[in-house]
Image 1 (cartoon, rainbow, N blue to C red):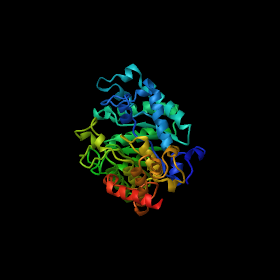
Image 2 (image 1 turned 60 degrees about the horizontal axis):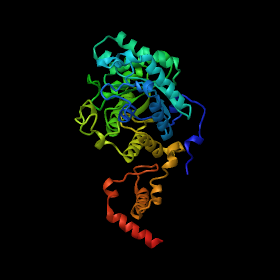
Image 3 (image 1 turned 90 degrees about the horizontal axis):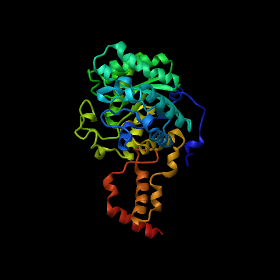
Image 4 (image 1 turned 90 degrees about the vertical axis):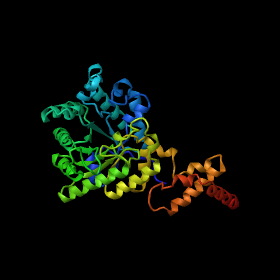
Length: 391
């Protein structure tokens, strides 16, 4: 049996050092959606004042992602720029201040990261200033206010994430590179490219030329669409003879019917998305596909809960050599079902283990099982009879 990660703490190594060594880096999941459901974030603004108002909620979610296998804890600074905190009557910048929100986010992430072998990434995202057609200097000044706090708190590296326009993403990367720390950059785009029609491959080229060491896609689309888009980025970099590590952090919702702007265009957004939630089995398939594509920074965004991150860590456990701490309560596929009081559920465990021997899609601890197969009572009853005969 593979060891649990908590027994394998190592000396702190940087993000690029880990990726250069060929290691798999597992990101964390979504904060604004998870905390909105728990009552700590307001849908609409999606701003992170919970770092000051309810630090215990933010701390707990960080800790759950860490136990699930996350190697990176992003500061909860999504939409924490000063202009966003005071946008459209939000007034967080006035009531709490941008500095306090960002400082608290850094402190909480560092506190939890120190409990394991995780890195802390300070993150910036797209701004109302850019969307209001402010000039380059004004937009960069917004990013620089957050960067000053990240430098003061000495985060391990920086992420420019959730950008619909590559121009603004490039400006963000240029500012973050002033720190001398590694920079990752992800855009919330699909295969059609950014909102100005710049193709994914060209977006990646511009981001790398601006100084990003890691590029990819986050949010707006489901795992399959995100991987399709990252593949286009990879091809663009290869054509330009540029090198960078690849990163993917998709939604945990199925979005095959989305338009160019992804799930925010869906009529269910944001309060009726639950029927679209992807399963842990979907996440395992995503993790394997991402790995096979050459992506080594694999995480999630909105909708990704700790159990989704655990599914990534467990699927890629053979390559990594260990399991996450949260796997202590989640052994190899369904083995705890053998302890269930209902015999047909115990029989299901036997069936699923038989399927494991037949599936070549997932190479980790899980495999793909159709939901209808779970409900096939005739199969489980036959298996139950076989168990009785064997015993």
